[in-house]
Image (cartoon, rainbow, N blue to C red; front, side, top):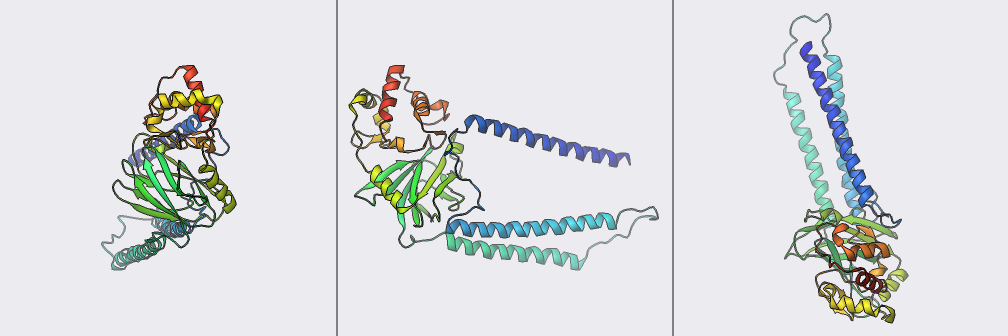
Length: 357
C-alpha cells in the first residue's frame, strides 16, 4: 500500500512539474511576444490556422487534417474507454481471493490490433497521396500569375510581372496578388534551405539552394494572409515572416502602376540622397534610377509597405529611424550592420527614405 501511495505521489509531482514548466514557457513566450510584437493594427492581421483555408490547396490540406484528427480522436476515445472499463470491471474486490486468472495470448485481440491499424494506415496513405496529387501541380494552372520568390537570410524577395507595363516589379517581404487568380510561385534560395508556408493559402514547400521548386495558391477573398519560413535557416529564422495581401483586380492594377512608377526626386532631401550614395547603403540596396545594390531588399517604394525587417516591426518614421540607426536592436544577427551614423546623417537618410512611397 505504501509503495502505491509513493507511486501516486510521484505521478502527481510529475504532473505538477510538467504543468508548471508549460506555464512558465507560455509566460516566457507571451512576454517575448509582448516585447517583440509590433503595435500596428495591420501587422498582425490574418492568422496561421490551417482550418481557416481560403485557397484550393489549403482546402485539400484542411480536409486531410480533419481526417487525421477524426481518426486520432476515435482511437483516443476507444482506447480510453477500454482502459476505464477495464479498471472498473477488473478492479480488486473484497470477495476476490488469490491471484486472478492469467491470460497468455489471444488470437482475436492480436488479430484486431494488427488488422485495424493496418487499415487505418492504408486509408491515410491513400488520402495523403490523393492530396499530394491535387496540391503539388507540375504545371502552372491556366491563367496564373507567375511570381519568382527568392529566399534570403532573413527576408523575401519577390519578382512580379508588371501587368500594366514592361519589365518586372521587384519588391521585398510583402507580396500583393489579385483575388481569384492562381499564383504560380517559382522558389529559389540565395543561401541556405528555407521553406515557404502560408497556412491559409498553401502547404509548406522547401526552398533549396541550386534547386528550383514550385508551389501555388489562389486567394478566394481579399485580405492579409500571414506565413512563416518553416525550415530553420539561422539566427533570425523565427522572424523571417511572410505577408501576402490579396486585393481586387482594380487595386492590383493600381499597385502595379505605383510600383513601376519612377522615384520622385525631392530637392528637400537631396542631402540624404547623396549620403545614401556616399555611404555603404548603395552597395547593398537598389533604388530604381539611383543605385543597383544586390544584397539587400529593393527600397524603391519602401514606404508603400506596412512592415520593416521582414515583418518584425510596423513601418513608420520611428521604426525606420531605429532600423537605419542599428538594425541589430530590432533583428539581432541580421546581415545589415550599423553604420554608426551621427544624428544629422541619420536624420538626412531617414528623411530621404520617407519620400520613397
